[in-house]
Length: 131
Image (cartoon, rainbow, N blue to C red; front, side):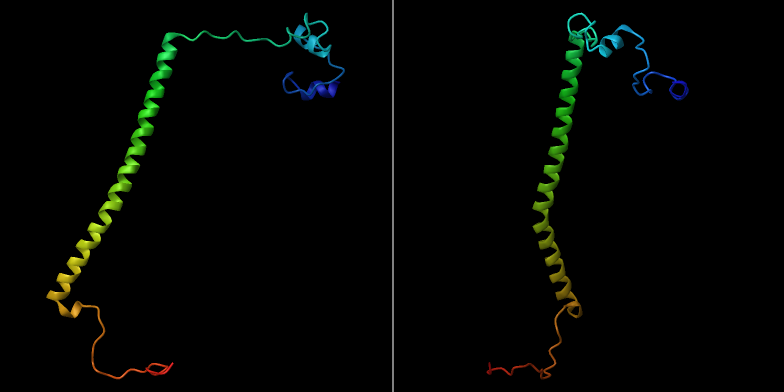
């Protein structure tokens, strides 16, 4: 017991032991299995009185719910707007880039990306006409 008392300075950190005596009525009632608790151990469990909700608390909770709703709606609207704009503007962007490339190639033919037609014979296997 001396070793136990040296290691544990507070009751909450100490493991329960058979040789330790309960220090208050609730601990004794719990140790006896509720025999002395007056009604089967109802005294052992202290019930916190329910706090009555006030009008200010209800108003505060309602305001916070409203702010949360507005925040979620704003985020969802922003994401949907970004998706719509990005999907609608992609074909327009591609069309503009294709027209710009076409004008650039017609003004500067050396920038056209096509193979040079030199009339040189090419080799392919199998020869055309044979399968």
